[in-house]
Image (cartoon, rainbow, N blue to C red; front, side, top):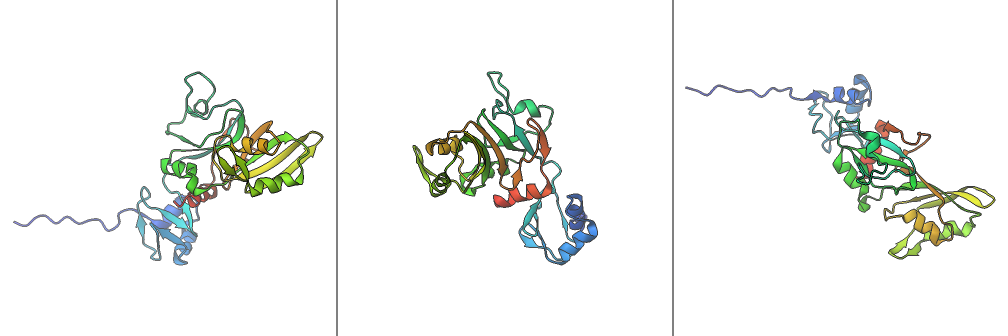
Length: 251
C-alpha cells in the first residue's frame, strides 16, 4: 500500500508587492515597478520575479539598499527624556524613570543607551534587541548630536581643538562637528556631534576646553532628530527613520 502523497502548497507566504504596500513603501502597482526595476532585495538577493512570496516574519527586505521593516510586532519610538528622569525601566529608590512613561505598553522595550539624569533629549526605545545592541555598540559609530549651554563667549579655537582631539583621563576624544549656535553676554549655545559613547563624554570634553556644561540636550541619533517633540512625549519613528537606523548598523 503506497503512502499518501502530501503536497506542499506552492503559494506559501505573502506576495512581495503586497508586503511592501502594507509596510507603506508604495502602492501595489508601484511596488511591482520597484521589483521590475531590480530595486528590491530579499534576504540579500535582488528579486526580479513578480510572483515572489515571502514570510513577513522572517524575510529581510531592502528597497534601494534601505531596510524595510515589515513585521507588525516591532516597535521603534523616540522619547524626549525630561531632566531628572533616570535612564532605567524602573528605579528601586522611587526616582522618575523611563518606565514611568511606557507602563501602559505591552511590548518589552529596550532603551538604546543612556542619558544621565541631568541630560535631556532624544532616547530611542525599541523591542528589537539586536537593533538596540548594535546601536549601542561602539564598533558601529552611530553619530549623536547635542545642544549645550556653556559659559560664553566661545573662542573660535575651541572648535578646532575639539575637532582635532582632547586628552581626557581615560584617553583621547574628539568631536566630529562643533559650532556656536548663539552667544549673548556670558552665555553661549553650542552644537556638538560625536560618535563617542563614554560616560559623560560631552560634559567632560567641554569642561576640558574651559566651557563646562550648564544644560545639555541630545537632539539627534543618526538621522533621527528630536525636532519640536514635547518633553516626556513618545512618538513612533517614521519608516525612513527606522530604515536609516537598520542601515547604519548593517541590518
